[in-house]
Image (tube, rainbow, N blue to C red; front, top):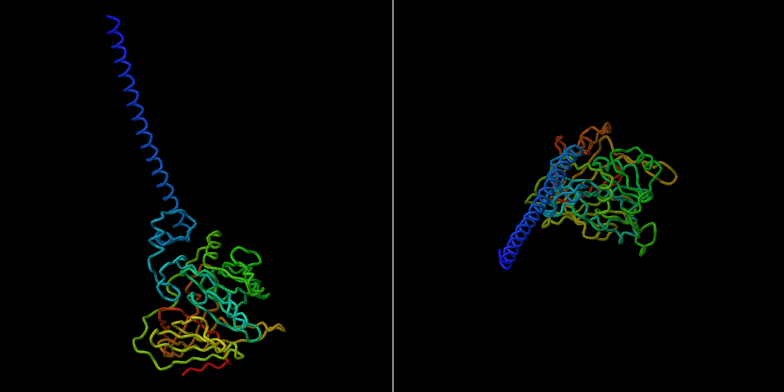
Length: 385
């Protein structure tokens, strides 16, 4: 074979070998990428299967219900957004929640109502339910309960009392406070029906605003509370509707004013009914109390007595007593009841709820919207006209 032909033949053979090698490498790269994708999808499928199993075992609820930002588990972002921006009714007061971040987990915060700091109060408008009850010296204090819509600032946060713990326990709530009476702190040591969040042991959930003087400068938020509950895997969503709910009556009644005399003038409460909005504008100490306008007012008359020289109170939370329920510009006279024997962890949450009945023994329906429960000593006057 001539030298020139041999060189040409050799070059052609080398070129064919190189082309085969290149084609092999390209196919190898494609196969490798495909294998990586398959393995990744397989791992994700296994992880999601395990997550589903854990969710069902730990919470015993529907998977869709658990796909919210509250969960400590990884999940698909698209599911978060579907749930975050889908309007859902509050289980506490029936109102629509556009952004339900808590998925029914109750959060209860003790909020101060001392007259000189009342202008500093934040977050009461965003609560689903607010309890108002007497504390020492005729001063009232609030237990603000949240279950979904985010509230950025709540406070000023103050100390616990046993009766507020009792109401928070009905909902297996995260209970936020700063210290408390000796009886309250002793209760919290063994109370499995609330998750105790005290600034003395948790300075992250509660913060201090140093523009104000202590001790009236402590605040929290629903986001901070949920982070703590999430970290501790505390998950006890409300079991069903807290009250039977209805739509507001098209025709309002003629009871436009409610006055509650807790003690001295700064703690007198007044509600004025607005027939257009079907809500009650709240006044405290003769002044409009921010933009607080609940749809329902419950007056729960209870036994009280002074326990010690400090003025700490016993406030009845179990048994039965007189109740007045205001909605639609009307009043329903009835009773409240709560079973004192409900204290077992395996009992249904709704069995521990305080319930309100009319004179015929039927549970009273409430309008959808914020609820204020005024816990009033049975010897204090409540007038309405």
